[in-house]
Amino acid sequence: MKYETVIGLEVHSELKTKSKIFCGCTTAFGGDPNTHVCPVCLGLPGVLPVINKRVVEFAIKAGLAMNCEILPFSKFDRKNYYYPDLPKNFQTSQYDLPICVNGHIDIEINGETKRIGITRIHMEEDAGKLVHSGDTITSSSSALVDYNRTGVPLIEIVSEPDMRSPEEAKLYLEKVKAILEYIDVSDCKMQEGSLRCDANISLRPVGQAEFGTKSELKNLNSFRSVQRGLEYEELRQAEILDEGGRVIQETRTWDEQQNVTKSLRSKEEAHDYRYFPEPDLVPIIVAPEWIEEIRATLPELPDARKHRLMDVYGLSAYDADMITMTRAMADYFDAVMEHTADAKTATNWLMGDVSAYLNNAGITITEFAVKPADLAQLVALINKGVLSSKLAKAVFEEMVASGKTPEAIVKEKGLEQISDQGALEAIVDETLAENPKSIEDFRAGKDRALGFLVGQIMKKTKGKANPAMINDMLKEKMK
Image: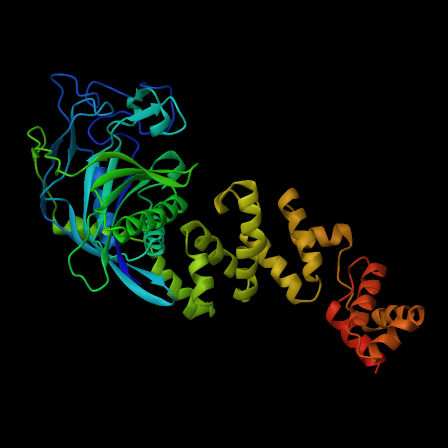
């Protein structure tokens, strides 16, 4: 490998408060353009902002969940720049004294744990939204501005440049999202812009300590976009360096349709935002007692939950990782386990048929019609031999469609698996008598003959015969 990739992420997360950070306007997504606004968030002359205490609480909660130090004294600053989506011509943010510093989270990569440092988490207000005339910013000839999002509270989570591949960046972003969902401070709906990511990426020759010249990819709004955009940028920068060229420090955007990054603006010179303390807001002084009160509200976080599922239920690291990726799925799993001891089968159903149904229906587990106790009941019917795996899938489909319990469906439709020794033996004998050629083929070493006979019995029993029992019977009788 010729070059080492260096990546740092800036993750912007809208907070789940009912009102904006400095005024009483709603934070609800949608609404007609420019209707969720007031003189304060529009920055009209003579208005004064007032900090929303819940924003500070949520920022501290996120900092604690990501192992940060909470500064007892922090302040807001004005970040001055001119852009159409910023009605005040400055953004109220935090600069030299943010609320949280020196944190970290761990990711699992190639079976190993890697720690990614978090430089800071700071509070700020969101800007408005530009509605472009074309499909992308680079293909648009004009734009309109909707200020509904202006003043919605954000936290910005700034990582250290500790990631060395696009895959690591994707895993880190997934972990950040999971933590924010677990502590319930953000809905993290990337499709609605409540979780957005900017990525800084540079390449340097292997063994070199000094960082290369970086490009910044703006507003990556899906895990797929983060990984693919960074992968493209890796190749683009490597080609420039291989040809003896110089990477230009610039801001770029990811074009999802063309699968390329495109230049937005040069950043050869550091932008002077002329930060200065926000004169209309007092500093934030956080009492140690309040920090501890907030710490006491933290739920079991993803890593701790993953290890509990491995230790208590014997799940593999992969299975536990998948189950705990969202708090809702982990909560559902725990609810299922209150009614069954078979964690592995329950996990297989959640990761298999249940997840497939949720994906196809475009819903989350919180909208899933099947109750945890009913899924546990389905697992029990499989383990008792009442249902084969094939019949269980049919029952599951009916559970989703009707909301009925698996036991009720089995009773109504007569779907019990036939496991009675005498009944099965009669069907096996009848099938063997009808297919003497298959017996000869099996004895001649043709294994497909056994599959054919099993298929015939399943056809006779409409799929209800216990497959393990009929396999054993057929082998015994054809010795």
